[in-house]
Length: 279
Ligand SMILES: [Zn+2]
Image (tube, rainbow, N blue to C red; front, side, top):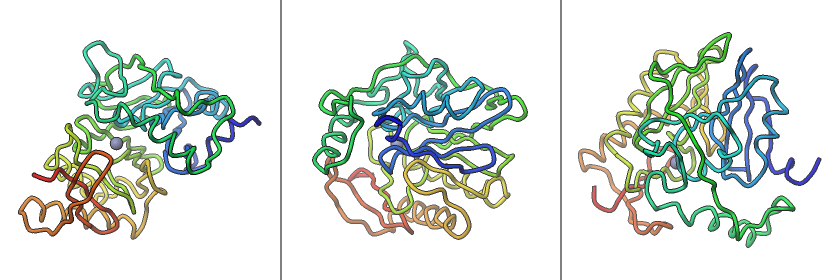
């Protein structure tokens, strides 16, 4: 095994799905069907993700991006078949690090330079100062909201707010919702960027609550924490209540400094929701 292979950690999540993490933080998921597999997101793009996932399954792989923030599209250019919400697909059909806005252009090298400063081991042939995310061709998600895996399909669940075209993928066979950045447990949840929409985010959390209450999923597998289940899913109720209070201007916040300037930080349940300073 070479250094690049070791960059990604792979574990079984469900009977037909794997969790793949990059640098202990950037989570991706490979969901198998009998004719096709779906890779959910492409991480920060530091390693050879394509060879890692093609070793795991025998079928063709479609990469589905929950959204186009830099840490979800990193290795997308290694894949031929890439799907994304039409709301995040530029007119020329090529996604790039500034597909949404210019806020993430410096981000790939900022992060890798921090990894170097922290003494983190990077793949041998990787030059952190040169890290760039390659633009790549993508197609819009199917209009019927279904991605066919052969023996079953995944349902596209629109969950905008953190970004305009943010989606989750529901696998009813395993009661698992692959949720991208819809929730960050014990992390900052950013709703402060130019393209974020706090009202749409609250609606998405309401949708998540309805799906959970209807028993549509029991596991919420998101990008920046361990998959959530059981009592941890109470965070959905906390967030919905907190977001309603924010909308009614009745929730306390602190002003914090972030890499993108000042933000309001609302402590809600096990998450800190960061918004613009004026909302
Ligand atoms: Zn994001």
